[in-house]
Image (cartoon, rainbow, N blue to C red; front, side, top):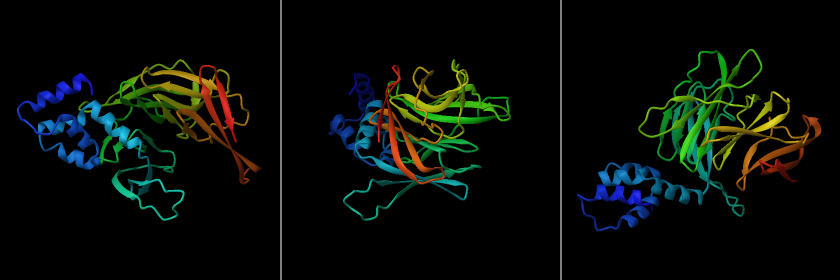
Length: 305
């Protein structure tokens, strides 16, 4: 635990003596369900301070990552429903029940597929309004609309900076009646106790985006597919969530289709799942190839069948 965290706890704990050591209190809290922790925040000033400590947040997330869950999102009656379940055991064929967490209004004109993204405990949903929710606590926040005066299409990606421990949303617009060249890049930092607002940032790489929400955030870097408008080649854009700077990587594989290839976190590296069909576009899938970005600076890829 950091010295700053101990000072914060000590200040709140001075008026009231307790027989339980603070380290033990934190350990007990970290093993409780998230909703129980939320309720206990109402007990006292000390208890309301503990869950907000960065040390405690990291402790809870570390334990949670050791017990991965499957997240399910479904749409019904203009609402989004979030569920989770434990991962089924390969040796156990019995059914696994999903646990209901929360619901919130959702108004989307297109399929739900690809419009939900999950980053380090939070869910980002894109519809007529953009919502970030916490399935464990049942809390959600609606993001403000972009400050743009143009009738453009809008796309948004969700990322996390593990160093500053900040969640950020990257948004881009494009001309609806023209090419999907990105413009008006904006960033919103998600915080507690502060009003959320969008900030303009500069992008030195002119690129055209895909409307499909295919992206992944790995160790503070947000990856998404695009086309370099200078070379007209397919690229993968790397957005550093902390510095808010753009880079890109080209893949010389002629069969790589970034539009339809899901991006995944493969052991801490970017992975592309490519599939080949036995009869062109509409044939059945006969094999999978996994391309892994081993070194972005050197543009080195490895391949697995």
